[in-house]
Amino acid sequence: MNTEISAAHDRAQFLRFVLAGGLAAAANFLARIALSRWMPYAAAITLAYLVGMTVAFLLNRRYVFPQAANHTHHQVFWFCVVNAAALLQTLVVSLLFDEVLLPCLGIRWHAQEIAHAVGIIVPVFTSFLGHKHLSFKRTP
Image (tube, rainbow, N blue to C red; front, side, top):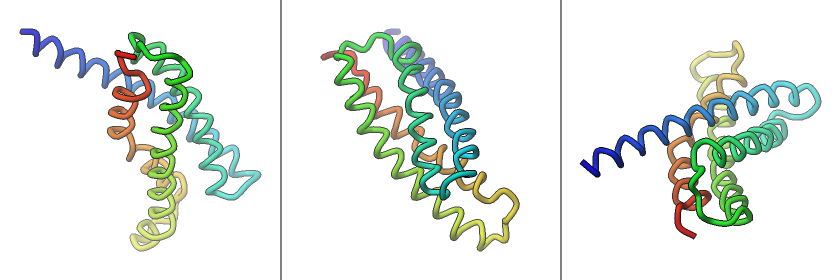
């Protein structure tokens, strides 16, 4: 029975993570579109990622991992480390799709938006595990 409760808790926590991440991704995505008016695509992805990362930290700390026992400065440090890895994944996937895969498929309509959306989705699972076990761990 205890295993069932734990599994249900993990599923609910992952669902909250996905919802918080969806809101953060929307902030990221919309910021990238706005920033692309003034800067190159890769730079806009990077700065927009920081917008999404800030939204994600606040939502995760409050709603996904409220029982975290480690100090806030540790949470921020590990959150940045996990997200730096996720940013690298996002950037590589976005550029790969925009410059290689979508052109090979003949997709030109909103190619950067499609590429960036795929890039945002890729690190969902690795980020959840990193945040659960590093950023917001339950034991200090």
